[in-house]
Amino acid sequence: LPDTGPVEVGLLARAFNALSRQLRQALATLERSVADVRRSEQQQRTLIDAMPVAIALLGADRSIRYLNRQFVTWSGYTAADLPALDQWWEQARPGVTAAERDALRAELLAHPARTLRGEANIICRDGTHRHVECRSTHIGDDILVVLTDLTERRQAELVLRESEERFRLLVENSVELVVQVSGDSRIRYASPNHLTITGRSAADLIGTSILAHVHPGDLR
Image (cartoon, rainbow, N blue to C red; front, top):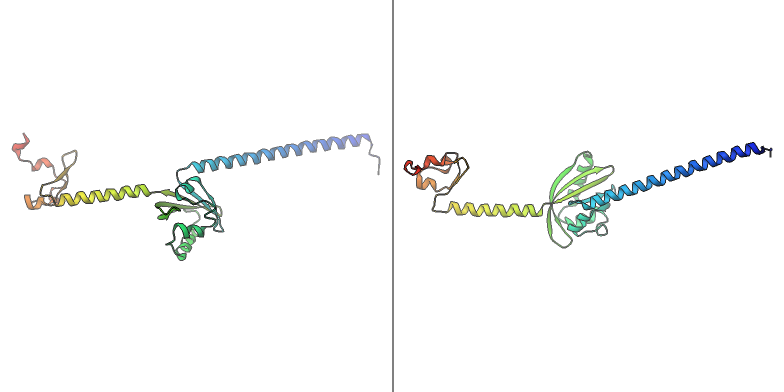
């Protein structure tokens, strides 16, 4: 081997030390980046778990990759219960046919930039039913599904409709004249028996001033 001499050895040593420092710095930067990514992922997961809606992430292979805490809480299903989308359909929506499932998936694939919305009845693990709004959108090759529980809202709407129907039947079968008047004294509703008693139909009265139907002597 040729004699490199002390000068060349010193240069090689300094170059080696500089390269080592650069490698250590690069490794430290990489470790910090990995830690930042993990911290960011954890923060995102914590945020998603705290959201008041149920969230599921579906893989391109029809696997269920993630369920947030709210999904597990109100549906009762865990990721272990639902390893793939087929298990979800079988347990939560058994009435949906395979053809309907394929049609829904085809629509999602045909419109990757669109968010598809719909409503459905879901059977939870404990056998209870929930009415949910479903929104599905693509994130890369995966599909993000967000379920909003509308059960209480739909039940309240049903109670309101039933109450309104009972009120309507009560008014329509009453022997008394019933009117609903707005703040500017306009008639908003008049019971059907006005035609029998006064000779004027409810349609004729609606929109007119209630004062126009009061005897002048009673206005003083």
